[in-house]
Amino acid sequence: MATKQKPRSRRPATKRKGKAVNLRAQNQRLERELDELRKENRQLKRSLGALICKDDPINMNLVPEDGVSEPSLDQLIKKIERAGK
Image 1 (spheres, rainbow, N blue to C red):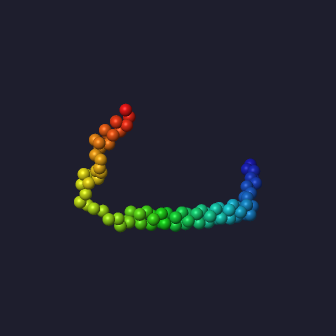
Image 2 (cartoon, one colour):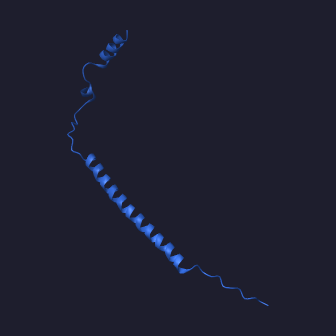
């Protein structure tokens, strides 16, 4: 003889809808934050691009000797050694 089982009751609809409303609100908040971060990211990329593309005159004919200033490195070393004595 089979007994009838009492059907399981579901949660009241208000609780489920309340949770869904909270999730929707959280989702909307996260989407707004994501939009703000994307805008900030685009602005940073533009700023970086402006820095990289800045038109500074560069002399391509320079050689390493052009970067050496007077006095020579040997003279600087001798001067430091004299100061240490």
